[in-house]
Image (cartoon, rainbow, N blue to C red; front, side, top):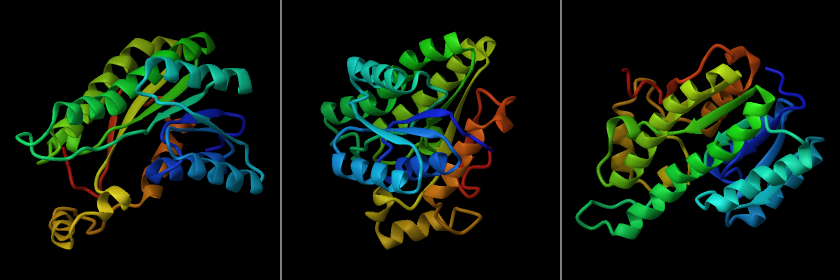
Length: 248
C-alpha cells in the first residue's frame, strides 16, 4: 500500500481519529495536508513531528463548513503541491442532547460542519480529480448514521446524509476513475467516548462481538487501504469499522 508522492487532504486532521489518519497516511509515503479550524497548536505540533521523521506535511487553517474556506483549502493545496489524490472528510462536531432540549443552533451547526463541510470539500476536490481522471475520496460517517442514537438526532442525521452523499457521488464520478467510499466507525477510543460513564461503556461493550472499543488506528488503517491502488475496484461502499456491532 505504497502512497509515495500522493497528496492527501485530511479535514479535522489535527485531533483524534483525524490525527491518526494524518500520521498513518504520511507513514505510507503520502504528502499530508492537515486541515484544522481552531487547533493550531496541535496542528503545528503534528507537522513538526512528521517532518522530524522525514515525512512531508503541511497545515492549512479553514472552516470547512464555510463554502469559501473549503474552496481556499483545496486551492492552497493545489498551489503548494500541484494536485490532490486523496480527500479524507473527517472533520466533525457534536452537540448531543434530546430533541426536546436541542436548540436550532445545535442542529444547524452540526449539519453545517459534518454534512455541509463534507459536501463543500467534495465539491471543490471533484473539479480537480475530474481533470486528473483519478482520485480517492473517503468520507467518515458513523454507525449512528445507520442505527441512530438517543440524544444525537443532529449528529445521526448528518452522518446518514454523508452515506447518501457518498453513494451518489460514487455514481457521478466513477467514469472519471474516482472512487468514493465511506467508513462508519463504531465506538472508538477518543475524547468523544472518554466522557461516557463506565456504565454506558459496559453497555456498548456488551453489544460488540470483539468485546473492545476500537482504536483510532483501526480506522486509519482502513483509510490507507481505501486510499491505495488495492481498493481500485471498490466504490460507493459503506464499511463499518465497529468490532461487529452492526452486522447488516
